Image (cartoon, rainbow, N blue to C red; front, side, top):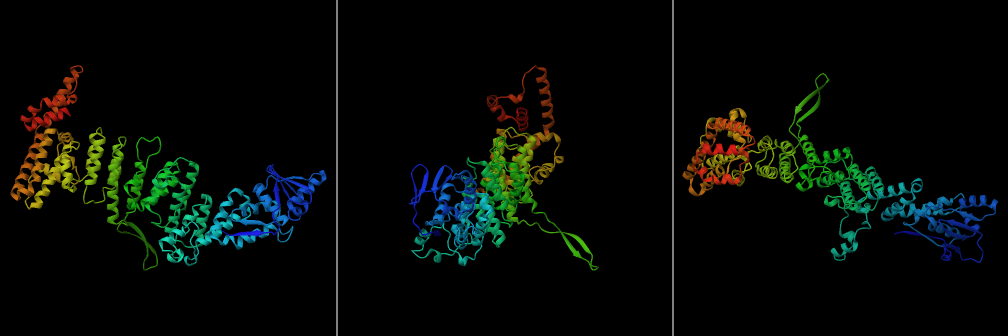
Length: 634
């Protein structure tokens, strides 16, 4: 730290302990100056010879024969005035980065200019600032910090702007002329390099100044960063690193994605300023940092403009995000745990980047401009889209645990990425299963839309094994999983695909989990959407168990297991077709009987105990009777 000493006489200021200060001198004091409760008993000549303000005040008071002067409004208070008074007496005064601003403002208040006396205090301070302090990186930052209590005078005296300009100039200097900033632990670095000079032992990084600027308040920090951008060409990565470091330093809990209690207005100002300062270059800041900013913006209730700006930036690099970073808590008062709508906007912004049309301007032979629209491939790589699809699948699995999450929000978000081809749908199946587990009361229509998101042909063997034993899935999905697993097993063994009834085969082979409703009679729709009974699930499980033994039994056994499985599926589905209309009639008659019986109750209220009591009867019943009893109960 640099400092300057002015004057040569010893300090002879004394105090009597009652806020009265005086100069130890054989001459009696002839003027009294009151500064914020402190009284200075001094002499007129040394003060009036250098202070134009005291000259004016004393001349107006001489008419009343009063030598008491009150200057309680002086910047810096009693301490700054004492420094100026010592300079008037020629006593030794030490100026440094910590007290130079207060002394300069006090000298301005007292009118200690060159017009009053040559070599006055203001002149000496200005020379000290320009020739010493503003040439030092560390001192410039300290001086700028000390200007805050003296606004707006320090701004009017251009002390603030001079400090900012000096700091920005230092940040833009060539790295070969940079010495490490004062916050860097040179001792530790010397130990790492076996006592060698740390500056020589290690190259100076481009962001050497980042940590030091975190000491500044946000308004000064904003002006310094803007000045740095104006003065030199610094990569967006360096500016982004500076903003990240400032956010971590000034916002408690920001690194953990939370906002601890404190001055919310101050936090809001910091967050919105950081968003405003974000560099325009793509990938200049990490997606994780942008998502932390978005979480903070949500917590402090910033405006929609700030949110939209962050959503747009995050959408440009969503493939870099992790699932945990996407878990943005909803604002207070919201029913859902996470802000799914905000994530949906981000994903839509990502998908919007893949638009494949571009307008070109060309000149024809006659010199006229011709507008031509040429289709170009999307700007998103297949790898980026696949990463985002996997990311959203993981996100859906997490938000599905929220019991208050509507099925429509889950489905709408999943549908955005359905156009992205994925080699496997295991993660999507896991998300759907989690939602069905946590939301048993969703409607059949919602369950149908949700299961339609999944392609059973892209489930792994493990996922298929789980799906066919999953009593939360509609029967259509269970049968289709079993069918495609059998097709896959047949293909791997080189045998032909087992035959199915015409309508059934066309239905199962259709794209997606659900085919066209026109290929199956309307009466079968409820059957397809029904959940399989325990007995039916046991039958399907046995067929899967047979499939698992394929590799052990060989090709012939595998073919026999496939034929058996398909045959039982055929009888299961055909029995539904035969008894579909009968089922409707029975349901209608039962409803009329219940209505006429005066509160006799519905079969849907049948208890689990009564179903267990009839288990032996169910075992010997035909498949059609089992199906009829199952649907009437459910």
